[in-house]
Image 1: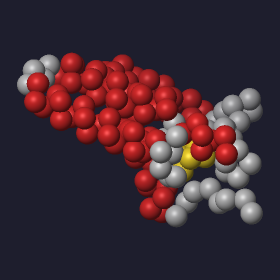
Image 2: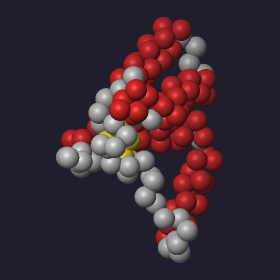
Image 3: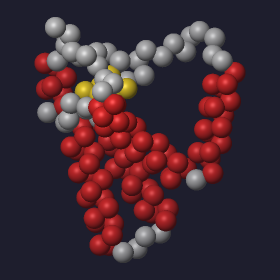
Image 4: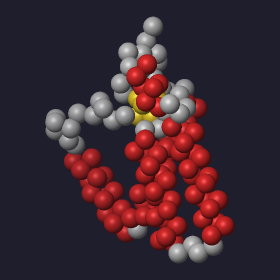
Length: 129
């Protein structure tokens, strides 16, 4: 459904935003939940089943919605980058090295929720006439 919608809306959507959660991000959410469960050592099969089911359902539904997700296609990295941005990237990498499963999972869950936030705030792409 995602690919069919992408092919039919190619001339209508704003290139700065994806329509629905991108497939790699959805896969990262689902794989991340498995990684975090393993990292925490959760052994109860019933908990794992419900957690994995709910995250897979969330990712699947979010993929086929019309919610806007920032595509990062308009970032200009060839120009001079401010020193504060470099510090933020180093701080982010340092944070990720402390507990990689949890930090990366939370990063992708935050991105998966960002479309709902953009929609709620009314900030998203405007369809071309």
